[in-house]
Length: 252
Image (cartoon, rainbow, N blue to C red; front, side, top):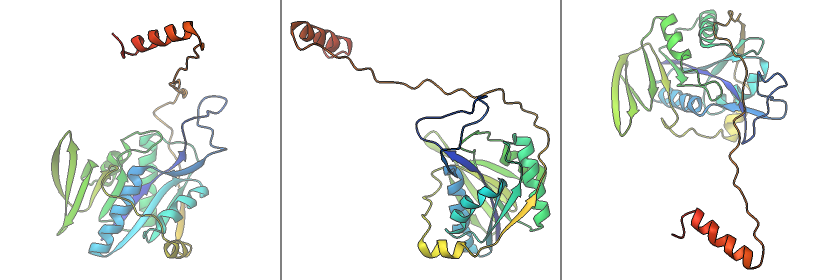
């Protein structure tokens, strides 16, 4: 089984976001990068399927040469090779992103039985890329999958709907987008990291089409703060403490 996993390098941000001066992007000069949790699960699922059915796992990402760092991390857990679809690093909209992935797939020339993506990326959460890529490839697509098994060329996909599960089946080849919780991604081992250094990463230059969705600006939400009241250590402070207890519902 030949499996392709499309992954995306996203900023590793903590509790505080810092924007560029024009508020158009996250300032990434002082932060690292990682993968979306959904895509980590997609890579883990691909490696497990490859181990069970044979074949190989190929990784594909859009971006600059710096994405090699994230590709090597995933090669270390068992993926076989990787492709960087080289762009100028700008954020594509879902149409342009799917078109660039399609261009890279065709340039590579391999015939994939299964294409996996994360349900949505951790930064823009567009949800559309997998669906648009499936349409361009002329393949069936199942999205938001949290359970996946393959038997005799048929994928059984489970989607969580509240406390229930929807089950879909589709013949391969197909495109499937998965969600966090599908599995528990493994950590790269030291031997895996050593092997990953020798695995092949190829590059294909792709051209991003003009965006059809325009981003105006980003806004950092106001952080919720926990207020602190300083009370005097006297009778007035004791009376104020009683008022605080009433305010938070501890006293009637």
